[in-house]
Image (cartoon, rainbow, N blue to C red):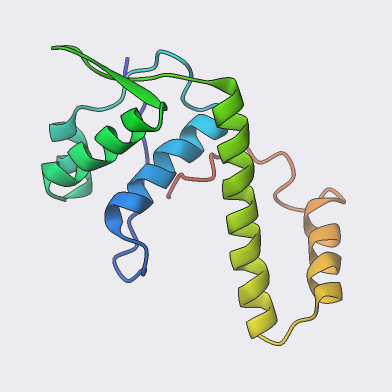
Length: 141
């Protein structure tokens, strides 16, 4: 059974669409939503779901395969392939990038590093609203 991926593409984002899709799939792997051996949607199905050119999905899958996150099986499709060391390393890199983006935006709004730390402490480390949230970080409504 193919698990549904709820990928939201931000058309106005400076990040190319293929990179947004690639990150969403990686986040699904990092979060444990997609596990070793899980089958991904076909190129055709995912392109129809996202209303984009199938060549974009082919590019995403080819890059993920080159990076060792998925493997293709002739006539069968694409499947998750986990290398725990690579997953751990890249997961941390994504965490760093997302954190840097958040901090940069908050500082740009005039907040201080202390403000940011207080917010994280209050909302996320003391039983705030998102503690224990089960929804994957890549899911959209």
